[in-house]
Structure formats: C-alpha cells, structure tokens
Amino acid sequence: MVTTAAAAHKPQQQQTRVLIVGNYCHDVLIQDDTVKAESLGGAASFISNVVNGMSIPCNLVSKVGEDFKYPVDYTPIVIPTSKTTVFHAYFDLGIHGNGHQDRVLKRVCACDPIRPSDLPDVRSNFGMAVGVGGEILPETLERMIDICDSVFVDIQALIRVFDSVDGTVKLVKLEETGFYSMLPRIGVLKASSEEAVFMDVEEVRKWCCVVVTTGKDGCKVYWKDGELRISPFSANQEDPTGAGDSFLGGFVAGLVQGLAVPDAALLGNLFGSLTVEQIGLPKFDSRLLQRVKDEVQTRKMQYLHCERSDNELEFLKPAGHEQFQASLGSAKLIPPCSSQARPWTPSNSPKETEKTPIPHYTVQAKLLVNSVYEEPIQTVEGKP
Ligand SMILES: Nc1ncnc2c1ncn2[C@@H]1O[C@H](COP(=O)(O)OP(=O)(O)O)[C@@H](O)[C@H]1O
Ligand SMILES: O=P([O-])([O-])O[C@@H]1[C@@H](O)[C@H](O)[C@@H](O)[C@H](O)[C@@H]1O
Image: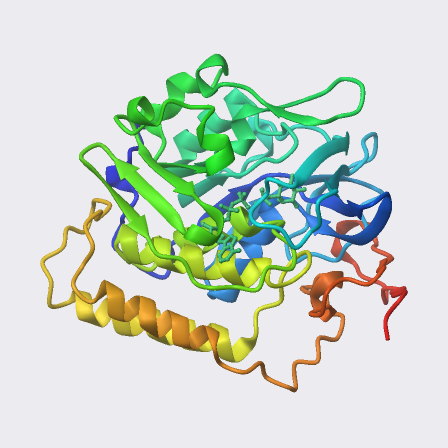
C-alpha cells in the first residue's frame, strides 16, 4: 500500500489508533562527571506519555532486557539475552542550556532491533517510527508502511550511528542510509535543526512533509508547495531531553483528532515546551490536559465553518490559528492541581516529582517482567 502525506488526515473516529515503534531506554544525565539524574527514556516513552495524556488509544512495540527498571503503561518485549538500551547524556555546558547544542549522547548499551515479526498484524491509522538506538531496521519501516495508513518518522531513528569504542552518537546523511528510497511512502519526517542538516530539505519535501523543530523558536513545516513557521510557547528550560519526542506526540495527537497541520504543530510546540520545563519524562497536570483537550474540541467545532478536505493533510493556517495559539498559551498558565503531589504510579516517571533545578537525584525501581509490578523502591538523594 502506498502511504503518503495525503493519507494522513483521515476522518476521525473511535477506532483511530496510533502505533508507536521504538525501544524504551534508561537515560543517565551527567554533568561535570556527576550523575545528575536517571530516568526512563526513549522517544517511545515521551510520545506515549503525550498521546495517553490526550486520551488517544495507542499501541507500542518496544524491546528491553530483564534489567529494565521502570514501570510503564505498555508492556515491552523482554529479551533475556539482551540488556536494555542505555544512553548517557553529557551536559558539560549545563543542562539549563538552549536546545541540545550542549548535549553529547553516548549509547552505552543497545537492546535488540525491532523486527517486522514483532509488529502487530492489525492495521493502524498512524505509525510512528521512533527509534533512538538504531533499533528500526529498513525492513521494519517497510512493514510499518504496509500496516499503517500513514507513517511518521523521527529522523533520529534513521541517521544515527554509534562509535564502536564509546558509543558516541554520530549522524550520517539520510541519502546514505537504506531508508532514503522509502521517503515517498512516508507521511511526515521530523528532524531537529541539528539533524536537518543531514538531509537536503529541498529534495525531501518533494516526497513527504518535513517538520524541523527549532528549540525555543518553535518549528517550521515544509511541504511540496510551501512552508510555514509555527510560533513557540515560552518555557523555563530545565532539561531539553525529550522535547522533540513530545513535540511529535503532540503533533500526531492533533492530527489524529482532525486538526490542520499548523494547529497540530502548535500542539507539538506546546508539549515540547512543557517537556523542557521538567527533568526526564514530564508529568502533565490533569487540569492542563483537560483544558488542552477542550481547546482542541472547540477548535474542531470552528472547522465546521471552513471548507476542508477529509483525506488530505491541510497545510494552510485555518482562520483562528492565532486565537488557538493564545488559548493553548493560557492553558499553560493554569496553576498545577495541588492534589497531584506526584506519588509514584506505574505511569509516572521517577523524575516527575522534581520541578526545581536538579539536585543529585537517583531512583531505583524494581520491576517484574511482563508488567507485574512490585512496590517500587525509590531512592532520592540530595533533596531538601
Ligand atoms: N527552550 C524552549 N522553550 C520553548 N519551547 C521549546 C524549548 N525547547 C524546545 N521547545 C519545544 O520543543 C520542540 C522540540 O525541541 P528541539 O530542541 O527543537 O528538538 P530536539 O529535542 O529533538 O532537539 C521545539 O520545536 C519547541 O516547540
Ligand atoms: O531529546 P530528544 O532528542 O527528543 O530524544 C531523546 C533521544 O535523543 C535520546 O537518545 C533518548 O535517550 C532520550 O530519552 C530521548 O528520547
């Protein structure tokens, strides 16, 4: 089946499903030779966090080793002979930087790749190829294209290579990978501005929609016939990890619900900005999420007055885009619900209790294989 950007915007019904494919990982944040924080990581965890927050049904395929230590909502495939993927992120110029320029990533452990046979047989509306450690193989992406109406790809799943000695992440040109010929069959390719220089955007936009995220400046959407800059939301950055992943989660959540591309990209910017304000996997306040869902519903009602196609991505800014941006901006200002004092729950990340700048902080969690949880043990050091 040929899947193009045109197929991505389907009539929205209950059965709309998102298939997220990418390994969970253990993230270790290091600054000045000191471990500042440890967290559940991997684009799949950040994206499912957003998609779940927006109450959108999804399915997730991920592989981990028996050492996987975090409770998660979607049971990963446990590979007894492999270890969980681990990334060390070095922030030698400080975590509170601007964007990711300051981050050096090392993959110090790699779990098994995800193979076509690991994917479900059922069809999904939106597939998300979001590997972090090289786990998406060309044949896996081929299979996703077959079983999904439209596939969204994070370029980091395609162009990362890993130093054979210390695992330092390096990037290669997209056209040198085995994925290049698949571009005409994917819906959206997302890249950060640092990654975007590893492709020829002018060439790639002829084949699929390209979204380049630009940190605190928001993002830019390119398609065959045009381009648009989408405004950011302001944020007090604590940790840039996962901003691009949460962006993609918000963007897809918007499209799944029938928003036009510029409005969905605003939702991406909103979740990206919320993510940089917390360390590790963010916890979104329930009142904020409800308000965002309400704003999306209101926005959809406004579309009823516009002429729109049901089976194509809508690239042009619909009337009222600026008002939608202002409404999302004011949702961000809602004070957090005090009853959400962030107890540990299976869907929480260990870092979610932290909002102030990072003290030394480690967490240990016991996890039983196959999603049977024991009471986790948390160790939090250096807290007031
Ligand atoms: N400092 C920031 N202030 C506000 N929004 C931010 C900030 N950093 C990132 N974002 C949001 O998160 C998105 C992704 O961030 P970016 O740094 O571009 O990606 P990546 O995490 O992949 O490097 C941006 O497009 C923006 O919407
Ligand atoms: O910060 P970001 O680029 O959006 O995404 C990050 C990946 O680049 C990193 O490899 C992984 O360990 C993090 O958990 C997160 O998924």
